Image: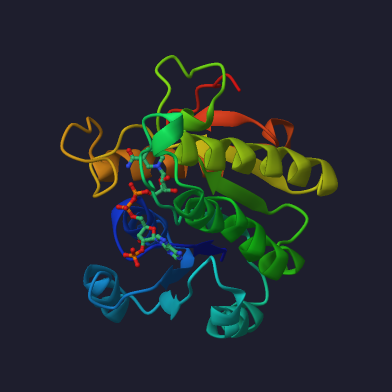
Length: 227
Ligand SMILES: NC(=O)c1ccc[n+]([C@@H]2O[C@H](COP(=O)([O-])OP(=O)(O)OC[C@H]3O[C@@H](n4cnc5c(N)ncnc54)[C@H](OP(=O)(O)O)[C@@H]3O)[C@@H](O)[C@H]2O)c1
């Protein structure tokens, strides 16, 4: 049976992905930071022995000890999903853009997946998959409204990281995925897509992806997106 690692799985899209993969028979290694925020994940894992949880802050490699030990115990991570992310300061214009805030957003959204990949790629087998949960807001060609400087730029850089990864690891399917505008804390009140519907879509796209799609930028329905 296959193993999947999902970061930032205590709530939101990450937690829905945990449920979707677990309900489809996968062994799931789920990371979280804060037990209170992750109470639904921790309750779900109690009832599901194939769901294992460890704490990890993706921006801080010194927090990876339990994660690394759990990955080593599993031996293989067939699917790695870099989901953890933050929206940041939502800077609307150049003068609002605060570089300290921007640095924090990059530490999570861009450097976090890189750090997790450095730790976990040695355990991803040749036919494995690596997924970056990115955003259409990281698309340069789709940016018709500006704003959100730090979030947009962090995801654009993440997209380029994934493309480089797909070149370095041609036997691994490396995907950049946009989950839709999803009803989570980050998605906010106006979001249109129920989180469980998003997770079902992402599950289908991820599990059905072929090696020929490595490097692609797709949404939760499998539609190709512009860079
Ligand atoms: N919702 C949307 O409409 C939307 C659209 C496009 C892309 N996305 C992307 O989808 C992913 C998940 O978003 P979401 O909507 O589920 O957001 P969310 O509800 O705000 O959840 C974010 C998750 O990331 C975790 N996280 C944040 N910083 C972390 C860190 N330093 N280390 C480890 N975990 C960390 C959070 O953990 P804590 O509980 O500990 O804070 C939480 O579990 C993100 O990458 C986001 O950019 C979302």
